Length: 362
Image (tube, rainbow, N blue to C red; front, side, top):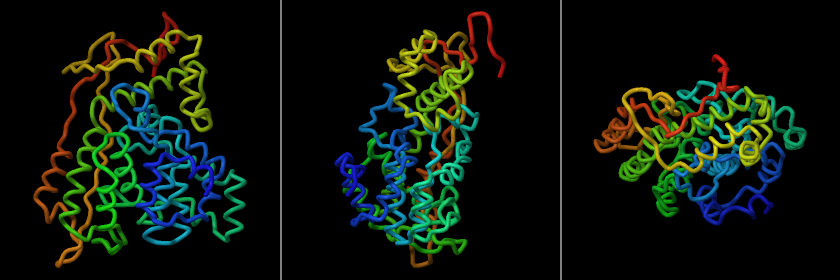
């Protein structure tokens, strides 16, 4: 075992043991690289850890997520190439994760930060040496989207989608315990979908219904007004720092979230530091049917993350919404959520403010 594994939260260790009862020790050398260590300092909760609105149970890093995805892939395929592609899939994640997509104006698809993956992998001497030693071609591990068990289009079930619903249901918004995850996970196998492509599928309709009933609670939280305003505020804080020269885009890919927060809190720019302290200490969000002036007020849409798994039936593999009224109802209820409110904090913050007389245009 290596330092990463030995220092894991005990519950995460037990969770990993569910995903792969035997940990593939060959994976440790790939985990123990500077590029993977960096994402160990990035939270999967997209900055919500730093807000009083959310009771995040414990820090679950992007590295934890990436390892868990790799374990799921390994458990079902025992294919090193697919497993490594899963391990590396978030290697280009910036600090505060999808908040930076919000900063880039990409709250709907949340894919604007994926472009550095190839560059980071190619520039990693250690990873490239390990691949060469193991006889693995770079092209076989640099894009997990080529493996449908690792990644596929929403709302299909992939290892990535499977994992972040599991872990978010443990840490971000507690919706289940490990024994429930084990029951669900052990009911899944690989079979071909309607396009004759391999996919993770459920063996039992009732277990799948239970799964949908539980994770649909998470889906609504991810597009809630409080989630969006927290992510947008962090995004606008980073934007303000970038405009003022306090932070570069490259810093988001080299500094930890804690280091950036320290820069904010200790900044001589009182406008920045004082407003971020207000953000960290506020526990109230307000709503309006119109934009409120002189308040930090937003109205944005966010990506809807959801899953419609396949179930093995006597008539073949069928999507759960086609064979379960309850699952279909819960999926549609989520898809029909419309958050048209303006949401605001009881203070103002303008990311384009550079001094009291001048405001930058977008």
